[in-house]
Length: 482
Ligand code: UDX
Ligand code: UDX
Ligand code: ADP
Image (tube, rainbow, N blue to C red; front, side, top):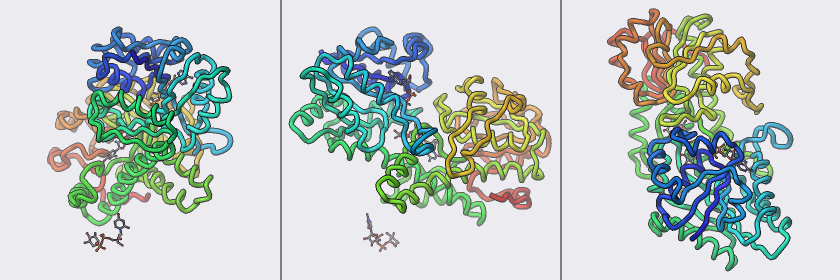
């Protein structure tokens, strides 16, 4: 029986290992984490992350060939294949602060593997890391082990998107495995390929050298984020000219060289990957003496920041240039629908921006806890060379202006405006007539995800702003300066 151990029971490690266990009954999978609370949650009825379909998969395998544990050393020691899926945030201090990846967790995992191993192992990079990290890890492993143990390093980046993780894992567009081009390296690649081949068609399992696999992950996320920044840049021009970004996206996406997916205008992209990976790419380019290339990718993030501040400015400008002491409802705080994850969510910047103008916020999200929202709104962001990331450290007085409520109607009651910041399906079917009646007039809706039917809402009486759509006369008369 092949034994797999995954270090890191997070958004990537948890779902990925659950699906491997489900699809490979002959493989024993142990997911380990230092965080006892997280492991307890994985072993309970309330999993630590919300992901459609995940409960079902975990229930089918847990206790059979899927285990969650804090016995890190023991589980690693017994494994044939060790996946490393620890967090790799952006460095906040020191060399490369604000751009480079912080590999502290990775390094300590690698040192631990070297320390406890008594047999040869395949070590798989699952979390996104800068190109050539595998080489560094290889050095740690080979310089720290005492005996004749061999380590083979593979890069096997995960492409799942949150909210659709299980579906993405069941039917991946591709699985990418990078390894050394030596016979031992190729043998390790084959061993991992055999695991995925249990459910992924052979032609979708791509094998490359180590660096190609590592770089492909950063490149894929940069390309995806670039599509959104491109369409969001167009959305600003659409608002200025009277074009409709949805029509433009549709027409552009019909070109099969471009394709229809991932072209929705929005208040900006969020999530743990896009910004972090692009910043990483920028740093790698700079370190390799390629400032022009670095500058090119930086623009993707700058447009994303611009989109968020443009949204805030639109809200403030529409309400006679001040939201001071006005109640604003925030619908949706997660970075996208079907997840409770708030990492880099545009809602943080938008809320901070509105709080900066002294608004009173009433926030509702179906999956994000009050504690999480309050932590996000008061934690300091790293400094980088764009203004939105120079958020002031909010003090507790900020939180006095924030209320987290249990449903959308409560959030909207007595408010002057409603901002939709996450595309949760339930926001499409709210009783907007009821919401309108409970609001101050004029009543505004700012749809940061283009989920509501603006014309229907206008019939009710709302003044509606939709990203990249022709503006109401009211908004045209109150131009926002970006
Ligand atoms: C992303 C990649 O899709 C995935 O392949 C990679 O492994 C990890 O990063 P994720 O961050 O989970 O996944 O979600 P994704 O669906 O890519 O959305 C990222 C952000 O872009 C969200 O904030 C989303 O709302 C936004 N988005 C997406 C848009 O604004 N417009 C779109 O058309 C699509
Ligand atoms: C383009 C558009 O494709 C077409 O839809 C539009 O109507 C007119 O402009 P064209 O300029 O004739 O057509 O050729 P195209 O195939 O788009 O190539 C443009 C340039 O891009 C060429 O120099 C081509 O060599 C280059 N190219 C294209 C690349 O360098 N890499 C590619 O992957 C594709
Ligand atoms: P991702 O979205 O990439 O999965 P997460 O932050 O959700 O990232 O998960 C990473 C997990 O890795 C965290 O739960 C963290 O506690 C765990 N972790 C970090 N370092 C170690 C380590 N050395 N040993 C075990 N677990 C670790």
